[in-house]
Length: 270
Image 1 (cartoon, one colour):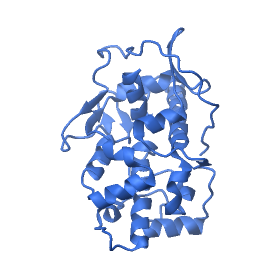
Image 2: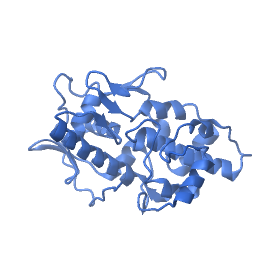
Image 3: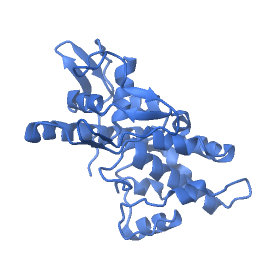
Image 4: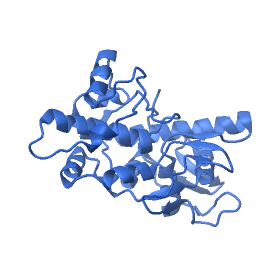
């Protein structure tokens, strides 16, 4: 899967961003903090929109991490993920609307002739607190043998190379200052795979992930050197293109991919 490349961030032009689908009050209801036990919005029954972006799943993970593991996450450059709020439901109608408004060529949300919000890959770092390094994630190759070794190192044994079913075992395994570097590296890889799959660049199918980021995991000690912001935003732009295509071909949106939650945060804050 190709990931878009971007020109330097233009000066942000901000217009009123309180425009929303009919029936939604401006500024409210897009993200709803809730208790950890609330159900996540895997599909919006009224619209039958399939969704795999689940901030709640990531919140459930990080809220149960030991302080030792949290420090590992901070050292990786992903400390911002530890602060994700518990959101029981994402407003998928709003996400679909925002994706339909995202102009992938000009990299901005366009609400009208003079109402737009420029969006840039750096904004992903502001919202999610992840590394914005010098190396492109998706251009780092990985052989089939290397992918198999990486997967086996975090307990993924399925013949389906996209499957991440059972990854929670490595994430829940006890770690402390006596743990081996191999065990710690396994946690780092598993954490990235989980967060990519459930929040930052979710795949269209449940418990599956893209294969375009595994090359960046070959050296767990260098994760902060990669531009994860560009990677995430590239998939957001692809998601916007898919939404536009569905609207043209089907007249409605049936599924969402990418981190559309990111656009909801941008919409609320500008």
